[in-house]
Image (cartoon, rainbow, N blue to C red; front, side, top):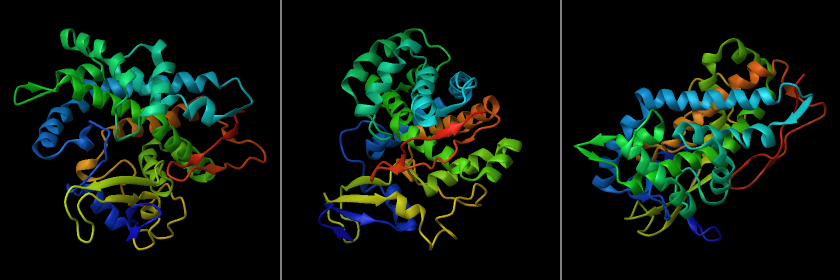
Length: 334
């Protein structure tokens, strides 16, 4: 239905949101130069170029960067009695992990982190200062590629053609955007859900292979972005060309027609769906980085802090309308 105050057509049921996110007639609004913004054959060609960048040595480098960063941050908390996991872990891990995975200098993490929180999200990887920062590294990786993810993007080929610099910068920005506020919020909600359910957390501690399902369930129940906007480039049913469309991820994830007891967090839910980081042709390449960040972040915390639990009397307060997550996570560490 059309909502005049919001200025957009609202899509809220799970099946409709999933279809809308995969519909080529509904595109991510500008600004943006990532896969979500490329149309038609251009999109397919660039996607073919990018896909190999997330396998093999590049995937190993990405995983190693995330894992190493997570354990460094978790160990820094080990001697403490209490901490705020949002400010001291969730806030920093995604960006630091993305910086490490792309092979960017560690000392620039704070600067990149500031750019990510002021000009990027998981769809539009564009920030003029970040672009200028990335260009020399892209040039160096073209000349002397290594084992990092930026090198993989620079050397990926399909039909003999490499990605242009603009696309490499946009995709790196997408990953850094996923490594910014969006994933920090998702990670905070993930940890809050598990700390609220210590029995489920104990089972995941004993069986780490269950972590992926627990992460997917948290994204279903508490996505970091509750609203994703699209623009119709041609009519879609009653939606006219040029109209704005708002996909309500938060409502879709709790659709009772799709999920039994939708408000309950169940880390072992058989089919939690996949909407929080896109669907179909709009699937976000940063979703892989976000999942690795969540999984290795949780494993690092459980390894370094075996007695992790809520601080006495603390209950997380969730804030935000479009982007939504706990403001703080006060925990007892020992």
